[in-house]
Image 1 (cartoon, rainbow, N blue to C red):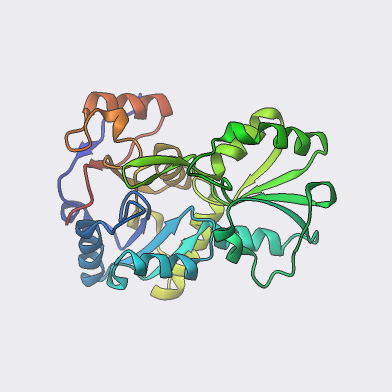
Image 2 (tube, rainbow, N blue to C red):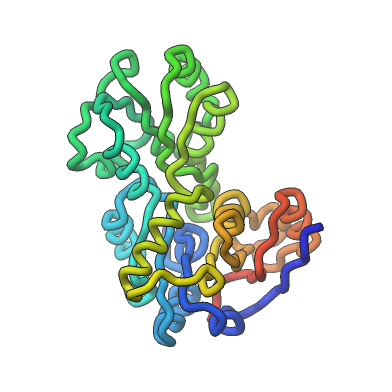
Length: 288
C-alpha cells in the first residue's frame, strides 16, 4: 500500500528538515527555454540558510557545459553549489573502458561529452560499443526511426551506454524524446544497456561525493532531499537510493494530471500507485 503524500504549497515548510537538496534541472528550474524564477529563488533561499544545492541532471553533457546553458537561460548561480550530469557519469564509464572505437547516436551538440577521452568515432561496423546521447534530430524523429539501426546493433551484440536515461523532456510546452527512449527500445529488443543517469545509483553517489567535498562531510541520507518532476527518474531514483523526494507536478506529467495549474490529485496518486513509489511531499511548482 503506497502512502498518500502530503501536498505543500511552499518549500519553506520542508526546508528546515534538510541540509542538502539534490534538484532536478529541466522541468524544475527551467523548461528548456527560460528559467523558472520562483524555483531558482527557492533554492537560493535554501542556500542562504546554510543548505547545499547540487543540481543533478540527465543532460548528456559535462557539468560545465550545462552550467553555460543555465547561464543563457538566466538561471542564477546563487541557486546552486554545483552540477552533476549524466554526461559526467557517462565520461567516467567511457574512460574506464579500454575500447576506443565508438559509434555515436545523438546530436552534434552532445559531442563535448567526448572531449579529451581519445575516442575514435567510427561507422557501426567498426565500433566496439555504442554511446547514445539522444536522437539526432529530436524535433522530428521518434525512437521508431531507429528500430532498423538497433536491429543491426543487436545482431552484432553491441553494448550500449545511455548518456541520458530520460524518456522525454519538456521543451517549452512540448515533450521531446530523449536517449532513454532509444535505449529502452534497444533493451526491449534484447540489447545490453548501461544507463548513466537517474534513476540509477552512480549519479547519486557522485552527487553526494561532491557535496561531501563542499561540506567537509558526506551528508546522512535522511538529511538529503531530492526534488524532481519525473516518476521514472527523479522519484524512483531517490526512493531506490534511500532519499526523500519532493515531487513537482508542473513538469513532464502535467498533461496526465489534467491541468498544469490545478493537477488532479487522484490521477497523481494513481501514477504513484502504479509505479509503486510515493514522494515525501508534492508541490505544484517549487516556490519558497
